[in-house]
Image (cartoon, rainbow, N blue to C red):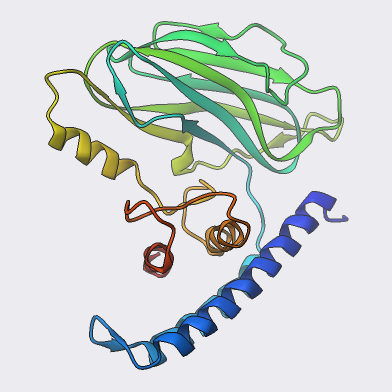
Length: 269
């Protein structure tokens, strides 16, 4: 079976950004050769990182992909009474042309305001979104033989009702392959199947909000549920073309400190 063209392009982009990361780390090695970080000489630390990343890049290039649901929100802390938007998306490693996804949410914290399908990859909705007291069911497909890569299914807007921490989770996920035979595609369970949010009002302390914001920070750049070489690649791509700012230490800048935090989480797994 031939590898889909989009996956080939993603692998080439990953390889290019990894090579850029190598060059960047080498430059930092020359710059920081005489310095020490937390008692460890940088001249020994960087070659170790380079060797490890090289080995991991080889396995990443040949790894088998997974299909999964991801949830993202336009805010992690929301004032009670305000609207928060949650994007329900699918990352497909093989062509998928039909999905059935149920988004669960706590009825005591939020209520559905609307479901926007304007940017959806789906062109056929077998039924209108089914909204209950604590869930939204999204069911549909495409005319084509399927989509591959990351695509939006719908944006669900919620009105917040009460203060507190809570999660929304994608459950009862079904994917069908675009092979004309209705072959099921395994939906991998990932941390990206859920999104954590925090509602506040005038009685909520600044410390509570600060903790909630800290919990929402992540070095999982591509939101696939783990910190991998692909996150490093995405970070370096953003660094080169200045398309995004990944500020992991919340200092308002994208610097080598942020890259160090990303690497620390990468090697911790």
